[in-house]
Image (cartoon, rainbow, N blue to C red):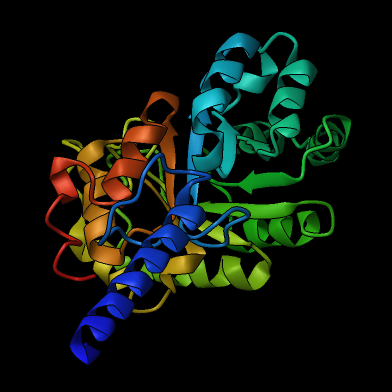
Length: 282
């Protein structure tokens, strides 16, 4: 009798445990699976998914938000697309209503700087009520102390993201320089530093083929905390690499808008690329 009672009690608590887990997960998942990596919750400091809007219409944004809003942490309006985007204020309002912050791509910042229009850039950020800004020098030659000064100047007005790396495929930056630049930009006030890859994932962190410069990445991680870096990784194999290297809650950027849900399944070990990776670790 005592053995039966003990078994009943064990079964009872297992049922309670599974009900509890289902209660926790039911907001974002449709059913419970064991041995799934724990994801950070929004608003996240780590495990960010930054997606790139390259010219979506308001209707397309509404469709994307209807299915992906829980997994999108921040949206970048790619390079200087905001300059030619119709109904820009209305478009930004849709994101804001969904609680998804936006920012203009770093190339727009560079377009203002190369024309000596920094004050105009500040007015643009104010006009569109931007909470974030990206400082980069991937397309222009900008002395690094000046770049850090711009980060410092912007910090009182917005949360600053700074991008490290060149858009020039022929310009190879050695690892120690990446580390030096990232450290200085974080010290200047950047919230996160972004590892450059462009929207194609074929420069900066990656070779022209899209292959990860793994030695570069591993060297960076010896000096810069992973939670301070957003790795631009638009290609699936690049996303898989960083998830396997750092974990489900790695910060990833330049994710195509139609790849947000697929990326989340890779993070959770629910796609073939990472299917076995987490099973024996949890």
